[in-house]
Length: 636
Image 1 (tube, one colour):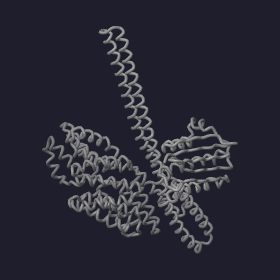
Image 2 (cartoon, helix red, strand yellow):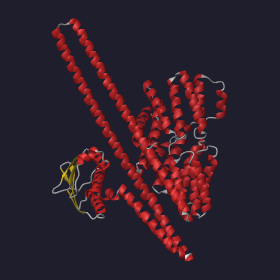
Image 3 (cartoon, helix red, strand yellow):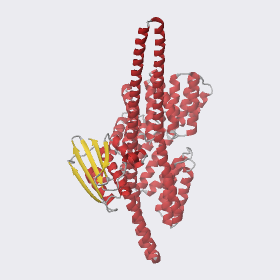
Image 4 (cartoon, one colour):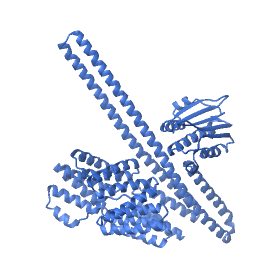
């Protein structure tokens, strides 16, 4: 949950509008800015309008202080609207102006907003970097609220990374500090609701519910409707998960009524979807259909892909309960389409970041080349002037020295540029692999803890329903049993996918045990004989080393099982000095590794990228009498 700290300040809009009619200059800028704050969290369109007017008036004055205030204010309005990317150019400009004029108070505010935006966009590394700078500035300025805001971003990052205990610790520290700041209602509400969300993630609903109620009370005292609605939505979802159906239904309806004045489509969509789930649990299938259609009508125009994915998944379940499997299949495909859209949007966001990095590097390269050209021109001018004042021998010596200096300078710059490019490529490669593994963990966790559990619960309910139907309509018993088997197969498939994406055995039992199980699962089915030895493997390795080597072996085994026609595979794992070695050999038909790599084989490029990311070496050679032997060394 990302709230705007500006919401702490409240004014009377009617009084401000009366004063605005006769205001000018700096006073007009501040009145427009305060009007934007009044409507922040209450009327998004008005908040954006007054923030833009404030910035326009500040630009006319040409006053840096008022320009930065207005930039921060407009960024806050965009973030409250969910348009975090639109806020970033405004905040970048605010940071640049504040660094130049040394206004640390305004710089702190802009950095806090940037950290909030990065956190909301799940760019955790950038959010943490901004949060650390804001904490350092807050401590320098002795700004307790700034310390709270920085801690809030760090706690949110811990929550996104799944380190819930660390997040709980920071949120509790926030609440302890806020006991000495009784007027900071916004921060109190934010901390209560966010701590409640962490408890809800940990399935500690009984601890989460009182926190949501308390956070809602703080936002209500502050007069911040958006905060009240957000707290209510968390509360309703937790009631529903805790099977407090009546309380959940009441809270969802309160959100719908209250949201009529704000018009947030996401709140409407989530609330009607919640009511649909409740009706479906009560077997009021017609009512559930109506609620899900209302949720779809709210989410679709606003392009709320996450909500649409969930709504279509619920409609799929509903039509399965109705026995309408044709329409159920349609909604299942729609849910998958939106899930694919979300994945594509995430990839596009990451590619956009890499594109910015690439363009920055190209600009730096162009500047370096321009600098070299200027140096060459200066050398030519110096040489020309020397011809007018010295003898031919002196001119020749100076010309040689100028050339040597220029050539040395050019080579040094080219070397520095090459090092910078290689370093940037490594950073980008590490970022891609880390993002890929984080996404695998998240999807595996969602599959195992979410969809798999829901499928098991659905199977149990379906079995109970099948027993009842078999008594009432014995002729349908065979069909019910067949559907039950299909559902059981789906449960097994979901768990298998989750284990492939992030095998639990790797974290629990370490690399050797996980690789032995991987060999068994991959090679047993095609009937390939295998052997495995592990020597000197008593200690555990860094997570990135274990995960990376596991993925490398996984890729090699996939290539062997699909293409090699091998009947035997040998895998050896051992530590020598400060290096972990992995050797794999098969008796297949073999292939030309360098030729396949030059053709752009995605599997081999992925393998090479992972070895490079771990700082390791890869050697492939022909095995005797046939096959391929691969040796990988990873520093530990």
